[in-house]
Length: 355
Image (cartoon, rainbow, N blue to C red; front, side, top):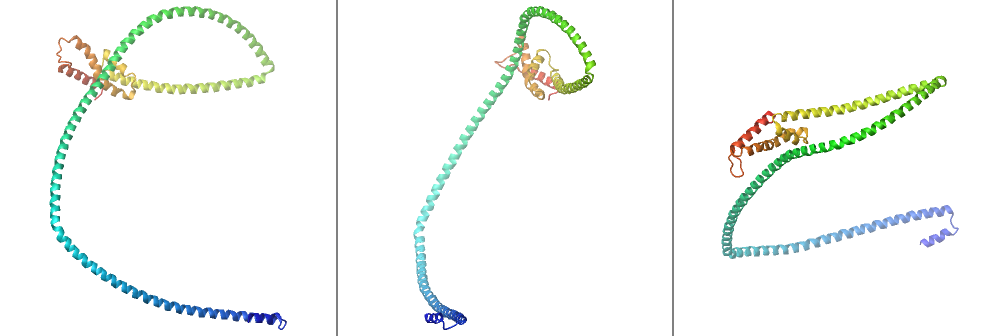
């Protein structure tokens, strides 16, 4: 039908306007027919879908009902069997349960007895270990304290012996060096005097030539370079003033440093004199040597640490001279002497202002 219409339109039987109208009418009619066909097809498919859906729902309901009834019947049967098996299990397990209870009780009693015995033995071992550790620790602490005291005593003794040895070496060195220095100074003085005379002669000659040059230079500067001379004088004065300012600042800075050093030294000497005031003789000298390398803020602590050993070292000489009158027991000193030593240390500490 479409081909026939196209052949009619291709011929010159109709005008162009008529052809256009026919084509437009044809297209519109064709569109309407397509829409109607689509609508009919959709309605038909919708009806088929509803029909199939109803059939599927009915079939599913029927299948679910049949299967559900079957499963419920099986569940009821299984539940009955489970109840019967529970009854049978309880009936059969009763004698075994009693046996198991008795076995557990016996095992628990034996385990508790073993636990109590083990705890008792562990407590005994722990007490033994604690006693051993306490004894060993006390022994180590005593040895440590004795070693510490021995180190301090050795240091005091070494300082005293070193001072005596140093005094001997210094006196020998002074005697030996005085002779060498005397001969060397005599030779050097003779050489220096000879050189000094030659230098004085050369300086006089140089001074005479300098005076001549200065007289000539002053006359020349006065006659020809008066203006330049004034500028140079002002520049020289300015340089001298700047030099004096720099020297003043340097002296001021060095004065501050020296003042701080002197104050620190005075503070150390004051505190050291206050601490050493109760001591006398060798004790004071030994204690001064011991405190020489100690910082100022630690003087009291070090004094308190070294004081008993210095006093003991001082007492040792008197003990040696009076050994016939002193009662000794083994390697221990008699109690009165120790009490006297402690009283001396306590009194010296009080005099030094140390509690």
